[in-house]
Structures are given as structure tokens and as C-alpha cells.
Image 1 (cartoon, rainbow, N blue to C red):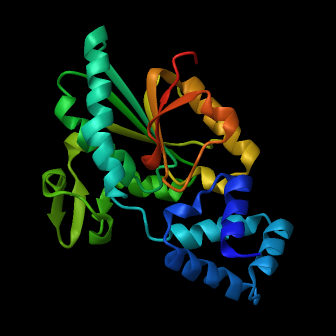
Image 2: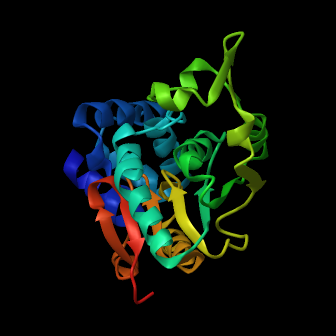
Length: 264
């Protein structure tokens, strides 16, 4: 088995699109998993994936390590800020709606939820905004609620956005005006009930940890959660399967930004 065949396997079986990574980076991370199992060929590794499905999670962790930070994947956030949010605001204004609901699913330690809060803050006087940050890891949620981060979490944050954090003693604390916009709570995407009437769901690099059937169910549930014209943003290594494509219209396929299809 060569590398393209292994990538195809990951895409077809888990909806994980490794083509967003450079070959050199992907090979380096993959090599760490081969060494962990004392194997040297992709055929051997494919057998390990077949025998031990938990190995998928370990591969994802190797690929996504140290990536939780504010405005992670800057070109995606640029599209959210410059294209998606203006479209959503215009849609709301045209219909006289005064409420925006956002769900950051799999929010980890909260940087993503706070990032979208920062982008929506300029509209806080015009719209009542509810942002829900959920995860099944209670420890990560405790950190999110505290809202205190190290310099490594700043990542690609712009100076205008960094103004919503206070710097003290080498740490950065989210200002209260942003913290008040976000409510964090424990939630399991595979077991718990979903929110309703959501305008935007952010679920980035979470689906890759689930099997295909679970991914399809989660995306189906997201569709039910979203209001008409609602948006869903996935991670750029993720894709939706054929069954779900009828439910969503791509807004920016390369950045994995979708809008709920009108018929659904």
C-alpha cells in the first residue's frame, strides 16, 4: 500500500481528508505511529487500523497536537469574519430578527468559543447573542470558564482582537465583556440532546474521532439544530459524506463552511 492509498482509506472510512496536510508533515506524523507499533510499512499500519480502531484516535492526536489556540487556521476565520458573518447579519436584519445563537461543539479549553464571541462583539448592541461552548472533558471546560491562557494560545490572533484580552504576569485573561457572551457546559455529541434554533455551529476537528456512522448521525443532528439559513463550519481535514451533502450547501468548500439547504 502506498501513501495515496492509505489517505484514500482514511477519507472513505472516517471522512478524514489528509490532503489538507503537506506530504512531508503527514509522513512525519504517520512515522511516529509506525514506530510506536514497531512496523515499517503502510500495509502493516493498515492492518493495525483494522484490528484496533482506537488507533485512529491516536493518529488524529498525532496530527492535531498543539493546535488549540485563538483563531486557529487563520484563513478560515478570515472567511468567517469577512463573508459568513456579514451574510448572517444581513439575513437577520432583512427579517427583523434580533437574536444570534452560536454553538462551539467540542470547544476544548474555550479558545474557539471566545474567538467567535470576539467577532460578534461589534454587533452585541444590535443583537442579543448566545454562544454555547460544549465539550465532554470537564477539565477543559474548567479552563475555558476561567478564561486564562498562556502566550501559546494567542496563535494567529490579530492586535484588534487581542485587545479583548488583558495581559498580566505572563498570562492573558479574557475580558468580562467577552466572557459574559459565552456559556460553557458539558455535552456529549453521541449521547446528549442537541440545542435548537442555532444560527452557527462550529465543530472543527471533532468528527474525525468518530466512526462513519456516528459522523453521519452528528451531522444529521446538526442539521436539525440549525435554523433556516444556518451555518456549519467543520475542520479543513474533515468532509461530509454523500448522505449529508443534500442537507448542506457549500459556502466555501475548501474551508469547510456550509449553509443548511433550504429544503431541510
